[in-house]
Image 1: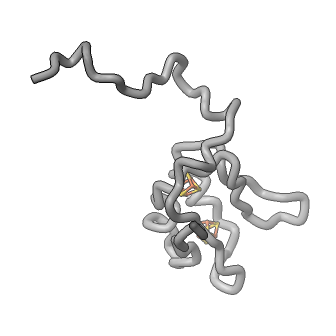
Image 2: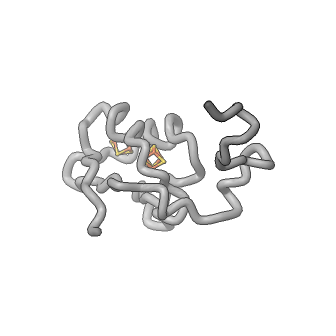
Length: 90
Ligand code: SF4
Ligand code: SF4
């Protein structure tokens, strides 16, 4: 049996560094906002663990897919169920 130190594992060297790089290839599904249900309340922004949700110049909540890792927390927490997780094209 291999010792823990012998197993190659991905390492995050700096805390919070996903703001500086794309995590788009981490996803197998992505959040899609259904506009007719969204009230732009920003609860998804509060819960998102990444810098992946923002409000555009028109006041609409948007997803930045370069920084979205596809965890689905936004879809779980949206009180209007306005976010659906959709499988990525393979
Ligand atoms: S939590 Fe839901 S309703 Fe609120 S801004 Fe996000 S997607 Fe829209
Ligand atoms: S799926 Fe996760 S990372 Fe992507 S926008 Fe939703 S909460 Fe943020």
